[in-house]
Image 1: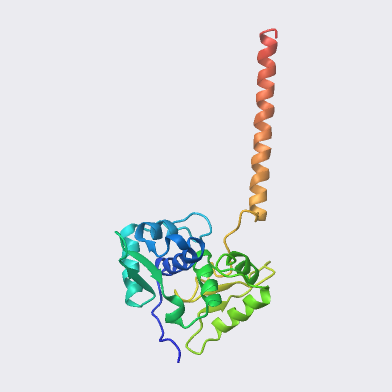
Image 2: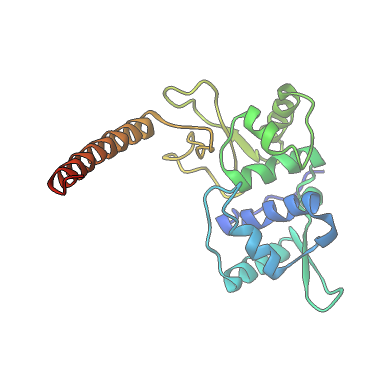
Length: 219
């Protein structure tokens, strides 16, 4: 029997689920997470797209909604409240699918190859075909798809996938993945070249000025 349909989650709510899944695997000793740790994870500057600046109050409100959907659970062990996700049980998904969904929630649309690399700390997939098999299952769920393969963008070699827990992806960004540190676009190369040319001109002018000053001082 399938899970009942969920209302569309906000960007912050889906980010919270992604962070909880991630930290469950990467920092198990501090999981479940405190509210402060969860806010820090949501606003993390690395391995996140888009970058958020959620407040503690906004995160608490989003958590309360997730708790009402049973997607997040609260525990009171210790001096502060801690939070864990319940995505696998509520959505009726295996750990592999939860790992892929969490990676999409954290980093935005990605190719199957990017998903395999980026989800490695959550689940080690043997090859890209195994990633694609789970994506296909997620996109063909009888209770409604949780991911969608996006149209190939001009110049792109591979299609990207997006999660649907926050509704349909923004068409203007659907096929655009955040550029990684190793990715440089043509426009960025042109801008860098222009900056280099400008700096070279400034250096040449400074050298001429220095040479003139030295001549005037008899150096």
